[in-house]
Each structure stands twice: as structure tokens, then as C-alpha cells.
Length: 465
Image (tube, rainbow, N blue to C red; front, top):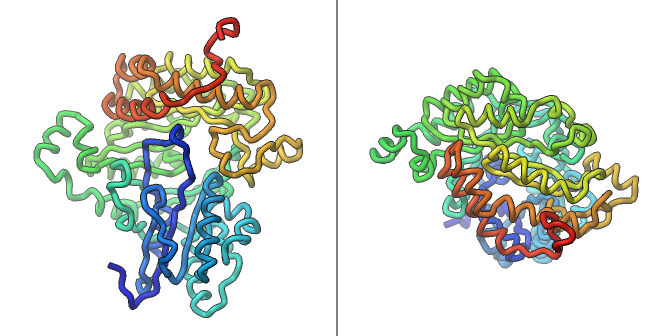
């Protein structure tokens, strides 16, 4: 029960309206609102509503409503804000989209936080208390992460999400990929949380060890299931967990001692560091999410990711597998020189190299990115409905494919990638890297994509369509 004696702040993560054919099975928790709740003074009541799982009560009378939304969810966030504003309740919005388009957001909310909200949140609350709320609070990207309170994970219902604990150790990324707005939001310099603070957080979450003797016994046999049952699985949400080798190795020492399983994002170059891979395996790494993006060196150069082209993707995947680390590979389609044959090429690559998980998305020019600026200059932005900026729809004028070919080709690629035969060839038929983990993930996507229907299929020869 919320105390009536304290002012209530309602944090809301809005939900995008999805059709039944876009009902993603996996639901991850999040850290942005729990971090804001953590820096909220204790003399306020705080509540987090995840609209994906909860219903918003617009007749509630909080003192303040705070929203966050990525680009495709921004229209729904605006609807939610409008409803509360009608009732005279102050509203504030943050996140990448609002930071990029603050004027647009201010048409619906009273105030916008530009950048990392944790560092201006208490100033905003103090101003609101005085009746002097500003329209903009600019945070910047140079704040030290030392002393950042642990996120209020207790405000999220664990039954709503897969048994995975999100942890953040760094912010920022030095790369300038043309489609990415995250590096602009967090800055182009890696900022690290103090190792002692990460250690304390991890120990508070997992220091008690396995609760049940049977789970402990099964874990010693090398089985993954006990880690899921007892929620000892970590997802490091950093842009590149391995950016600072020494720092990452120190974190892995803690992970090995705590006996957990984990996965992260990293660049392909770490596959050349055999000692690092061995330490990843020894500390419980299930998977590394690698943004391969493109199989074309020229396209990698186009997106300002040419450093990846210097590495042999095939050798890298083998190196990960040899160290019992699965590979979650992601790709991007929609480059100007690509024809419909690209879908078959990515599928064949995924099969031939037995990618444990393979997802492809349409290259999307998000507002604020250099890709958006370029396409804007070229008059190629065809859609400005933010709901379509979900990487499954084409919002620009493609080069050698039509919009239908690009969108339907992507859906077909997902259907083929998560077909039963593909899952068998990639997961079951050796090298069997954590097969139960990846079988579960792939099968849930199979359940979704089998509902998808398309008018165009690039996997079928033209004369047989």
C-alpha cells in the first residue's frame, strides 16, 4: 500500500500497440525507470507501471508522472501524457527520443529531460516543489558513475519478465555507427562504475548462493537449468562489456566466485583473445551478442563500422564456440547496393556457422542519427509515423529493392531462421553450446514467426512464385 502522507511519483513505461503477429514472447525488464526511482528522495512514494504488463489507471492522482519511451513507443507515451495533463497532473518525459526531439515532446509534457535523468532528477523535483518547473533539464554525458544508487528492481514484478537480472557496468561508446543514437545519448567516452560498487551490487543479488541443494548439485554437473530456476542469470546491458579488458577481467573474477551465468554485448575483435574467451567461459558466459551488421566490408564502411571488416567472422564464431560461448548475431539490411538475394545470404551464413541466435533488422534512420540527417538531405525519408520506426518496417526509399520486398524479405528471413529445420541444424546438430538455453529462445521465436504471412518470398525462385 502506498502511504497517503507522501507525494506520489508515477513512473510509466508505455506499451506500443502490437498486432498478434508482432507479439514478442521475450519480455526483458529495464533499468532506466528503476534508476530514476533509486535517486528519488525517500520522502516521496514511487511506483513503476509497465504498460506491457499492467493497466494504467488514469483516474489515479499522482503528484507527478514521469515517462520514458523509445522512438516507436513515443506516440503512445504522448497519448498517456495528454491524458494525465487533462487532469492537471504535471508530466515529464526522458529517454533517447525525447532528448533528440524535445520540442516535439514538449507539445505533450510539461518538462523534458535531455540526457541521463539521474543527474538532474532531484533538481527537477525541487523546482516542481517550488512551482518553478523548467521546460528542459539538460544532463550532459560527462557525469561520473561513481556512487550511482542501485536501481530499484523491487518495483518491477519479476513474474512479468524472463528470469534475467539486468546489470549496467559502463556507459558510452567511442564508435560512430550511423544508425545508432545511443552513443550520442550516453557520449562517446566509456565511463565505468567503480569495481567495488559493482561487486557489492552483484554480491547483494547473488551472494547467498543456490537456495536449494539439488540446484547446487545439478549446477556442479554443468547444467544450465538451475541458474534459470533460481534466477542466477545476468544480462550486462553495456554497449560493449569487453571494451576495457582489465576492467572486464576483474568483473569476471567476481562472477566466477559467485557462480552465475551471464551474457553481454561485445565487438567481434575479442574472439582473437583466447585468454579472454577462456575467462569468459570459466566465469559462466552463456552468450555474446555480436553486431555483425553486414557481410559486406563496403557496407560496414558506409555505416562507419569499418573496424569490424578487419575481422574474420567465420573464425570468430568458431573461437566463441570452441570456448563454449554461444553467439547471438545481429544483422542489418536495407543498404543501397543490396538486392533480395541478401536474405538468402544471411540465412546461409547463419546456418553454415551455426549461429545460436540470428536476428536481422531493417536499417532504420532514427531521429538524431547521422543516417537520418543523410536521408533527410536526400529526401528519402518516406514515413514519419514513429510507430513504424521499429526496425521491422521500412521508413525510407530503398535503393535496389521495393519497400514490400524489403519488409516481406525480412519476415521470410525470420521465418526461415526460426523454422524447425533451421533450429535443428543450428542448435541440436552440434556444437551444442548451451543447447537448452538456445533451444528455448529459438522455439519461442518459432511460435511467433510461424503466424507471419507475406505476399513476396525471396527464398523462392522467381519462376516458381
